[in-house]
Image (cartoon, rainbow, N blue to C red; front, side, top):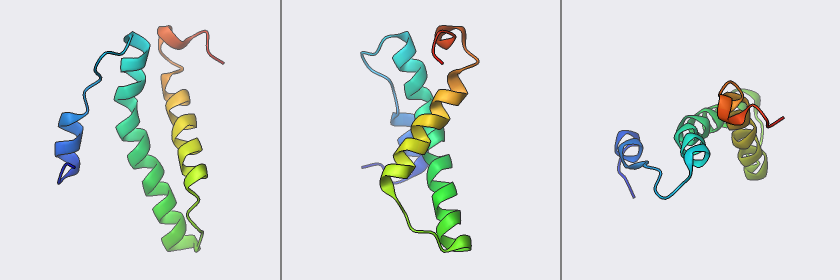
Length: 77
């Protein structure tokens, strides 16, 4: 397990994926960090509970929205 976020990001290489898969893979670290940040703020500042299923869904939705601007994903709605 990497001991820092920087080490993790340097090791985050898409291997054996098609072009679309590589693009999605590259967006995941940012979406994961963003999702965890939002959940953390909800817990700290709003007293919300952590719901892992909700976090995972939010990460998927975020990546989906981020890739919408790329030609490779124009057919996905």
